[in-house]
Length: 161
Image 1: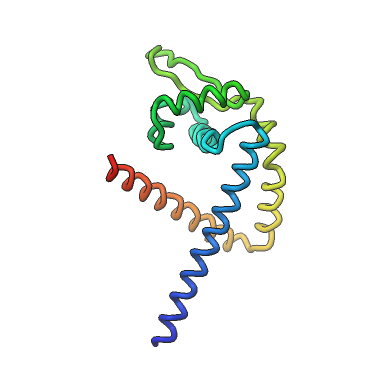
Image 2: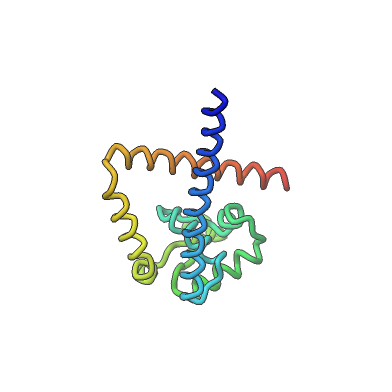
């Protein structure tokens, strides 16, 4: 029984190491995209947040501030850079003109698509090695893991506030 427990700990460590490796590679690809686009790494995180909130009405600068843990001044600087680079545009809310929404610029899809197309090809190549039910399991794991980590991040930020 002790051997089984020790083996399980090694598996958990290996699993954690593999997740860290994947996260690191994704992060480094984001940094490379930022450098190639004349952006900061934080700008890429903001761009991803805008993409996740692509459905109308989009994300507000306050929503970005909360998600990224930045000051309002830093969010303004990020949005200014993203807007100058043609990745996003800001619109006023029709019901409340004081409210601003940030949207992914349609032309930016081409820029990001060109850079990340090889990533999609890698994903397709690896996914093809697995049976559909295995892919479903991976999707379920990644969805749950992302949700758990997002919740942990929010809890830790709330504790600091």
